[in-house]
Image (cartoon, rainbow, N blue to C red; front, side, top):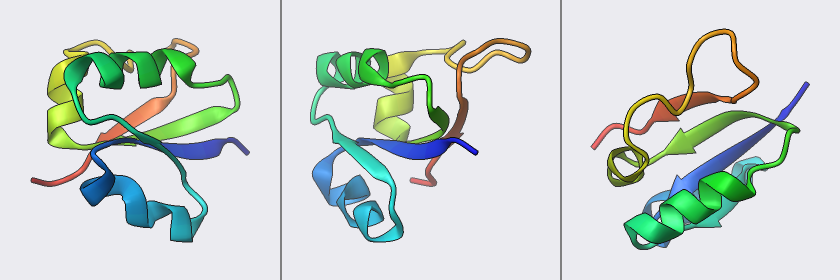
Length: 75
């Protein structure tokens, strides 16, 4: 079983640490893309804020690839 990570602003993802999520705080688009690149192979689910999803663009989690499943938080 893999781990869960979250990428986004501190105010949106910070509390997820209480649930054992690896939180990567990213306050601007370049930081979001850097946080995505820092994900390890043990991450199987990434929770992103809508703003982080926009910064990552499309194609961050294509079927049949080694990339983790991505879930976008509601606005």
